[in-house]
Length: 237
Image (cartoon, rainbow, N blue to C red; front, side, top):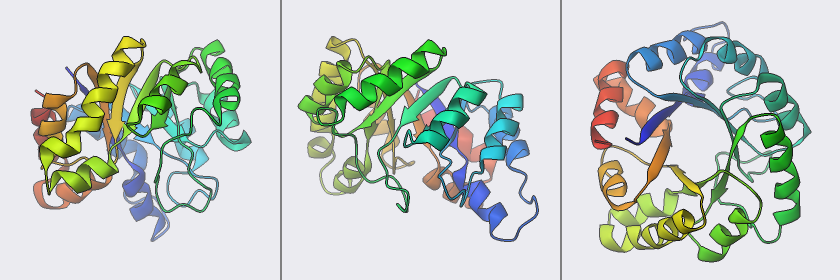
């Protein structure tokens, strides 16, 4: 079964908007697991505008499923990941001032850089994943870095799904077959929601994990967090 990792960045954003500790990020992570999530994802950025570095240390103490730390592998990110040793490090090439992730890695241009980073992470027992667009050359480049997995950047899928689902999924299907052939595990994330997740899951073979935050938290405002997590898990069956 494909695992659901809940990205709790939006919970941290809500907390930070008023100061204090409401909502309690650590408690929300524990509740997500209690409600059925099989992982917790965070994406701490250098300015700590949502998830703070201290949050990651606190989460590492309580997460009992899998902790996935996303981010651009700058010195601050690497120091944090090597100190907390999460289950998975997902490498994302976003700029420090990016509102949200908006592109996958150029795994050819940055191959040497990624290879060195991944070697360090794997030496410390941390599973690695590279954020990529569904482009064959980028999948092939990722395989040469030594990464364990790739994570498909699915914003374009989500946009095109509303117009033509079959056309939207096609490049991901082709690249999933290629990734599997090259020995890469497959994750996916960005703009997956209750409308498009089931179709994506049905059509992508060997999908190991989806990381979902924004849409899931928005749905939780209407359906409640426990019910929402169950609704998303249902799309993955």
